Length: 275
Image (cartoon, rainbow, N blue to C red; front, side):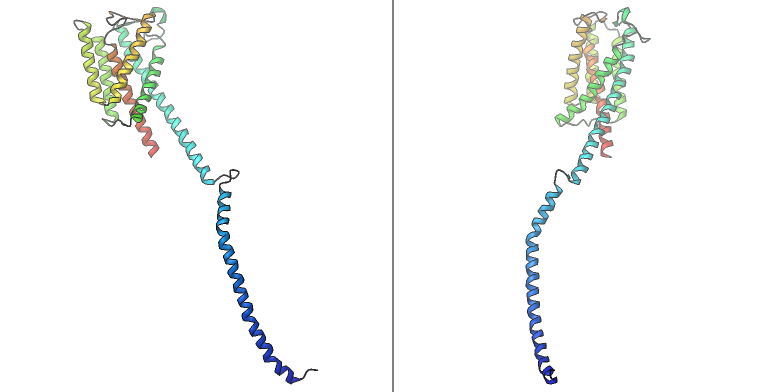
């Protein structure tokens, strides 16, 4: 059996050995922890890169890209919706103006249609309102597009009251072409030309509006010449080949009027999208 003095003698040594071994173990633990921290700091960027690669994996797809795709798709759908609405409004305006103004021309015997093509109570050919409505839709959409392409947004008198006055002046010019009696067609043509330029100066004053108005007048006059030449209808007292010399003035003022309507509709669409 061990003696009591052996226990007493060995006790401090054992305790000292344990005390001496504990700092060594603590030092080794600190070194191990430092190594782990260094390894973790070195592997941090790789983990972040791996996480980023996982986020851009085509199979998963980034969540932000999905939201952006849905937003762009919704924006395109909204743009098409507004475009269809503007086209329908412009088409309706062209149909109404065609029915009213063509009726005035027919009643004053300025424009004559063959008896076999008269198919409505408005004493006009059935194809006149749809053709004028389509032309109004094209012209009304073209004006704001040209303004945007040239980088010159139209800002002169941009309110509906001004647009309505422009429509009233255009109807008055057309009414004057059928009602006023001049000594000759040249005087009437010069008067209507001055009124048409006055309409542009009062309600437009843009280079794009002037250029498009002249282009529309030229193309519409050429198409009308071809229609009259082929016997679709005719004008009384023609003095400009097969038509009346004041007809380009009507087309010019009509283009400016429909263009202002199209610009106003485009501005309303832009305000709705901003809101």
